[in-house]
Amino acid sequence: MKQIVDHIAQTRNVALEELAALLTSEDHEALQYLFGRAHDEAQRIYGNKIFMRGLIEISNHCKNDCLYCGIRRSRQGIARYRLDKEQILECCQQGYGLGFRTFVMQGGEDAWFNDDRLCDIVAAIRSQYPDCAITLSVGERSRESYQRLYDAGADRYLLRHETADKRHYEKLHPAEMSFDNRQRCLRDLKEIGFQVGCGFMVGSPYQTFETLYQDLQLIRTLQPEMVGIGPFIPTAETPFADRPAGTVDATLRLIAIIRLIHPHALLPATTALGTLHPQGRELGIMAGANVIMPNLSPVAHRKDYSIYDNKLASGSEAAETVEDSRARLKLLGTEVPADRGDFQ
Ligand code: 5AD
Image 1 (cartoon, rainbow, N blue to C red):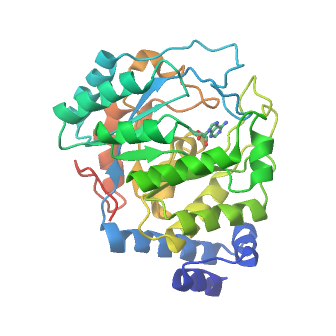
Image 2: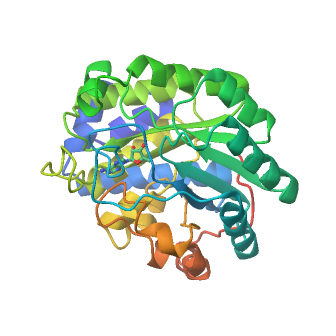
Image 3: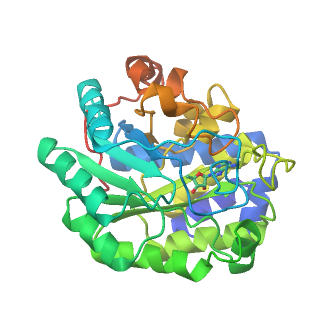
C-alpha cells in the first residue's frame, strides 16, 4: 500500500486499481502514511500557512433543480432570501476587520443577480478592498458574462464539476441541465484568466471508483487552481433524502490523493466535512487541505442557506470565531495569515 502512495506521488497520477485499493484499504499505517505525505506536500509548497476565505452566501434562490441540493428550485419548505449590495459590503467590512483577504460570493443561480447588478457589486468591492481577492461561485453563465465579471475585478471562480462522468452527471441533475455546458463553463473561466475551482461530492448517489477515477483525470487535465470536495449529505425534501451520506474517511483519502496528483492546488477543508465530524476541518488539514472557508453571511440568513441538512454555520464555521480557529490550527503547527492566499 505504501508503494502505491509513493507511486502516485512520483508520477502525479493514479491508476483505477490504485484508487480502488486506497479507498478500500484497512491498512491504517499506510493510510497515515498517505495523509502524512499529502500534508508534507502542502507544506513544501505553501509552508505552514492555512488560507482563509470569507464565505458570503448571497442568495438561496435557484433556477436549478439538482437532485441532491437543499436549495433546489422545487423545494418548498425553506425561506428564500437574497442579500443586497449594502449587506454584501457590510459582510466584507466585517470580514476585513477579522483578517479576511478573500471574499467568496456564493449563491444559487438567481436571475436577480444579472451581470449589471453583480458587476456593480464586484466593482465596489474591488475599489474598496484593492488588496483582497474576489471569488465568485454563482453557477453556470455565458462566456460574455464571465468576461464582464472578470473585467469588473473578480479574480477567482468556483464551479464544482460535480462529476466528470456524463452518465453519472445525468443521474444527479434534471434533464434540462447539461454536462457539456458545465464543462464549457470551466473551460471558458480558465481561458478568461480566472483562478478556477472545480470539485465534487464524495459518496454522491451512483458514484463509483470509475467515476472518481474520471474526476481525478479531469483535475489532471484542467489543472484547476482550487479543488473543493466534501461528503454528500442527504437532505430532507430532496429526491436523495434517503440515500446514505458520504464518509469523512473517504473524503480525507481523496483530499490526500488530490494533493499528491496536483500538489499546488488550494484545497479547502470544507464545511460539509466539519458538519459530519467535530474535528473534520483539522483532519482535512492533516490530510493535505490548506484552506478554510468560515461563514461571513449575515447571521439571520445562515440557516436558510441549507444546501444540505444540519449544515454548520456556527462554532468553527463562523467567521466571528476566527480567533478560536486560529488558536486551534496553531496546535497543528500551522498559522492562518491575513493573506489573499493566491495559487503558487
Ligand atoms: N451534500 C453535500 N454537498 C452538497 N452540495 C449541494 N448539495 C449537497 C449535499 N446534499 C454541494 C455541491 C455544490 C456545492 C455548493 O455544494 O457540490 O456544488
